Image 1: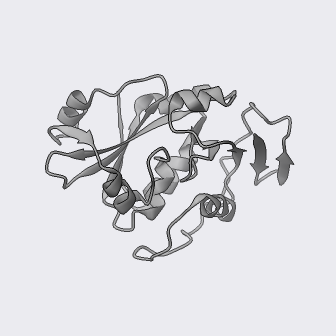
Image 2 (image 1 turned 90 degrees about the vertical axis):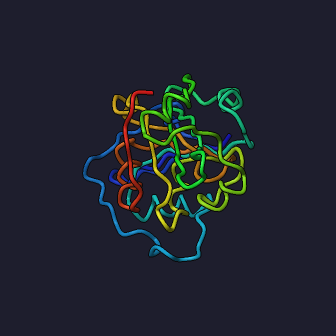
Length: 205
């Protein structure tokens, strides 16, 4: 596994460093810049585009390259020592297929889709197809992540975070590819999504 730790304010860059498994200092003063593209563009954000995006925004992060993983259990098996920060991401649709949701919960939780559908007034929820996943987020199975929002040019996907994340400094997600994981300040991730134009809701899940 390759580990890259980047702190934009301290100008630190370390490969396979002692930052492995440790939380980087996150700086409230990081500057948020304009997106790399305007809405309606055709560019799809892939793994290295996400890295460039974070660098352009001067956001501190810790990057782990690893073998392809498709489940939370497989992520834990590769030896990430920051497992308490790992997120589970669910891409859902309503019964009519008109509303789509990216639901982000703690890795040790199970989502009650019936209860969630009632809370958000969406009725019966189900997992969206791989075709819809690609259409709306530009992602493939096993790579679902909040960074897929960068590919949602119409800002059609509604993002729902578990309230529990408010109590964490960092969150771990894929950078639009399941061969890497990136850990960054949770507040930075929420700001990225909101500035892109997608709605963000916090619920107890």
